[in-house]
Image 1 (cartoon, one colour):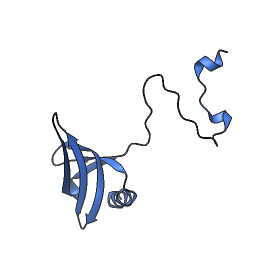
Image 2: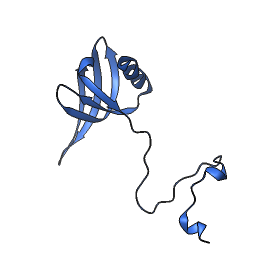
Image 3: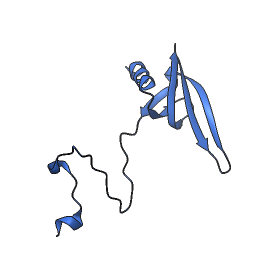
Image 4: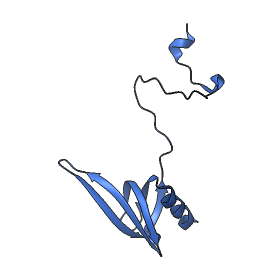
Length: 101
């Protein structure tokens, strides 16, 4: 089952976070480039104080313990959310200041 999901994420090209069981670490914002046999090729970037390093790493399928993907994000602060033109009015999020008027 995990093999099929990893293959699906590889085809979609989406960013994922992968937990490596044998190393007890997360790889954040990685892309799955290829699956060949039991080897999975990942590409990701790590930022240090003075540089950004781009890594390509091959891991064994059996060492992958978990995969997560970001579904959505919302900016913090006083930001007006974007609303699609075709969004029905009933489903739109109302601003609390507009409700009191």
